[in-house]
Length: 266
Image (cartoon, rainbow, N blue to C red; front, side):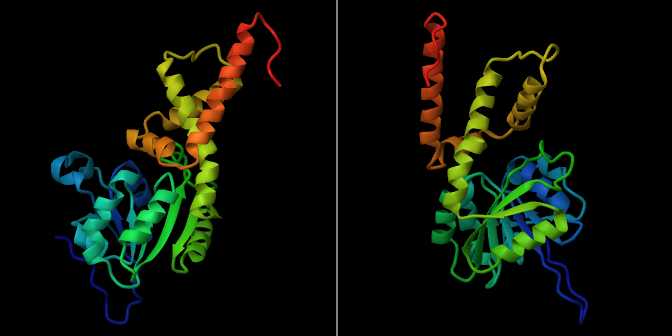
């Protein structure tokens, strides 16, 4: 079991960060946090498939769930369906006054889960970094992160810190506000990308600038874990209406185009 670092007498305490989940996004987060804070990472997958966990970020200590959960800030970095199991594993080890946040792609369902299952003595913040390992390859400055206050008063200070330290465009919103906009922003992007991937091979030579941008969008999400697509399309309460409207309009347009070149519906 890894031990938390000892502090020199009189030294100013350093905020410790525990990562619960050390997949692709967990490692991305660690690469930006480890130069600033002691980071302790736990991933249950390491017990059965240790190879990915060997590719660790410098400054990150791999540890057990209890050690990561005993940190000042605990980040839940896993898909929504695994959230309850992760909370059950860390609940007994969370310190009073600690802050727990998630990085899930939807916010209403995780907020409800965390409110119900995390102990009352911790603060809760919902976050959604609107980027991933592919879109953040050139750095995260200027990229967007949504921050949702759930319990406690830490959301606004966190947003200010994200802006000042990492140059992120931190947006404060309720979980409902986030999911309503994300239903279109993410729901349609991933839906269109999923269809285009099924249509491969796609042209890569004689392309227009607009098609190149479309290909870039596809490439940014094509390697996302299946759980991400599931969460975006199935766990966002506003996604079904957006999806039905999109397919209905597409069907109307296809019908109009099949009518011997008749006018498109207004």
